[in-house]
Image (cartoon, rainbow, N blue to C red; front, side, top):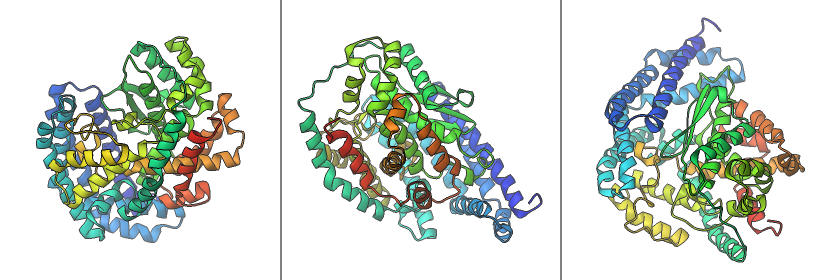
Length: 498
């Protein structure tokens, strides 16, 4: 359809993708490379770029092009492409340019301040920058909600996990809360008598980086289309053709950086394997943040922390970090499956992690609804942390409500994606293990193709051709079923063989 309305739409959305490419790279640079004094100018430049993207989507010509293109669409792929274009277009046209610019500026200011305020335990200073972020997010939520008929928080959630609403999350997370505390206690009792050796450092950053690069290569990362760097908070950014992942290092503890790299490589492989002929359009991009997190958690939790994978990489660990008994595969397996409630989400074990996500979901939902204000967060955080994990965070903002980067730029509605991703990943691997009973033997031998080929076929190459429920159904044979996560956790942490 070279002269069609659809072709004209594709040209506009290709322009948008190129702007997004630039925004992604300057965002990575802001987090990984930019000197501190560059933030004000960078924030202004990024806000200007957000305005350009917004203008591209609010071009009055797009309305008639979308209507005309619907009469031209004759195949499923084109109809799916139009569905995704229309979704993005509708959301953009509900937001005034003034708000887009203000939200970007407020987010840049808050995130930059957070870098030092967290280290200084400075909640008061953070709050001054955070209030404008909340104000922008609430206005955005209200505008989206009025047009969609959704609750304000659900309207924000829709941007990260289309079709998922807080009522469904409350039900799903409520079920998890009913069994998770008991399972945590049961596993901690089981592990109380286990002997675990602590690795003896220091572990030089150069050695940790070299180890991480070898593991990335093993997992299939394409170094001609991406790179590894350092940032205060690990993330995966960039675009499909140029994926940037980051980690952070501690010389006294290599475990965080190593598994963080595995996690971010899962995100990166998803981006690198999106359908190349469609990646410049919304339909060729990642389906949702829940699906994106399912890729990182498939790599980190389902694969990376499995005894089979730890056995596979033990020679690499010893090659780079030294030969000591604490780095034997059996001990590494015990270390990476050790359950101990802690304050920090990104350091949390697989079993206690959902408690961190549920806490954040409940707080941000209340904040956007106006049930609480920003200054109420620390007290509510402590109350929920005490209830979920029995931990005291009073006065400890650094390891409490200041520990995450997500709220600094107004990403309210993102956090549920992590536990949804864990559920999707558990469901994928249940399907994989059913279809490939010898999966662990493949992993131990270094043959990860049964996993990566399956993900490539069922998730990566699908982009956004299917909506999330249909994607999960096609991949696993049923819709989202949270029981697979519970079954996985009970098998890994309570089975005698573990």
